[in-house]
Image 1 (cartoon, rainbow, N blue to C red):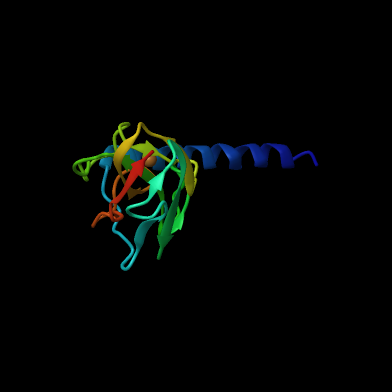
Image 2: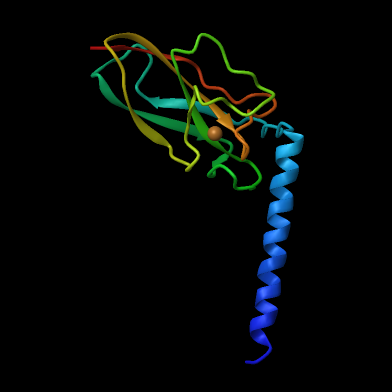
Length: 147
Ligand SMILES: [Cu+2]
């Protein structure tokens, strides 16, 4: 009983040090994670060409890889990012900007509210540091008409 507490404390301190060292390295290098061959991201709903109400659900599909929250270092995983009305992709060699919607909690769907008219939706998968994979894992663009 007497010796257990100090040992446990040392172990936790060691883990914390290793974790912070790991986080420091990924932030400093900002290297792109190789994409898992065959991995694909896609929008399940709405379908391309659909007419939707102003507030609607967007469901994210991913095959060949898994979803993990941002900051979690698990092989073959990433988290979703939604681009709305983006004419082109953001820079691929740095963390995705705040202008894209990050789903860092590992969410696989969301609700969006948009003004009436045509809009485009597109997904891009980011790694634990929000950096696109190499090559990027990007969905087809879905065009919807908001009523
Ligand atoms: Cu992100």
